[in-house]
View 1: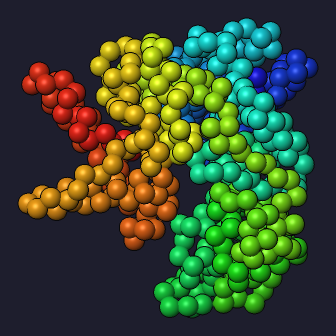
View 2 (view 1 turned 90 degrees about the horizontal axis):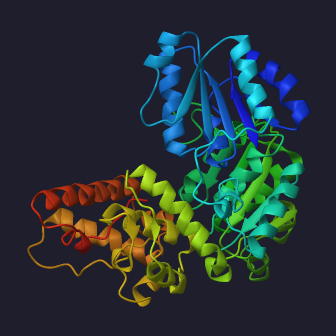
Length: 472
């Protein structure tokens, strides 16, 4: 169990240090909510968050953070008076509200030190032991990954994570940051495929005013933003050769110069990188610098594809069903054996991301409280082989269709062709990832609204199966 304490005055932390530390409970003390989303994103159901709220704005921000990260652990909200405790309650957040006093806080901390069960009932003991900082799995391959994460986090060496798209490389990067000594610092992400090559150097190192056309102000790059924290560079092998050379110099010297600048700037970062290619093979093929490879790959973590750890699929299904049943307010109790067998037999080329999006879609469209085979919307395994998102193939464009429908079909077809990789799909479409996410969310909301309209007219979900869409 890990206890995260958010208290600007640190009073609760000082009391927790005296009560919880002797009991062997790990404590993370925060004085601002800035690192909270990163910590909660990789938290487990065993973890506890204690928040001291002094302003209504703080309560709203923390409530949103808990909702967005779908924190499954236990939350305690410490308020100044009983009236505040009642008014600050939020119906969508399961939390215990406690009026602040040293006696009440100590009583809570003693409950935690005694190991008292504080969390809501979990779906099963198996799930409890299969979750590791947001990652799910109990196969030998994943246990090896978990062990490497812990060893990597204990030091400060550069880490390279590689595996197919959709296997959870970013989750691993977040887990390394969250359990490292840098966890109270920032975690900054840079996706090499999401930034045009002409702007990548500025995004990495920053620029000074007047460095190029449009540079109307000074701007910090990710190396500055991640100072005293972790910099996660995704899709590293897509970095251009000139930028590979500049990245190598920064890693060697821990200094960089802004675009258009002359003054060297020091940076204190922990570098974590990821790629969907085997970096050693990229070196052998001449696509990646060997000297850079040896710098970034001090610790290598290979993430196995889902087909190599099929025994984890039932646990992943259980995990995602619980998440989306809560998010979409569906009373789903479980999965019928035939549906489980069906999902176990599918190839899942889009890996965990595909499985997650597929289950999110099934939860949106399911009628009863059990997921059945007819809720999966899969006639056979072949349609799944071409998609990484669980979206059905886009229908051919027909004459007379509204322009917005033509756009929708083209976007979904491109996303399917990119095997669910939104960054790649956005690149092919010539739009930003944010724009693509906005459109997918709109399509998903249209499906949910259509389901409500159909139900009111007595048509059930038959019309919905024509548009198997989820924004994920």
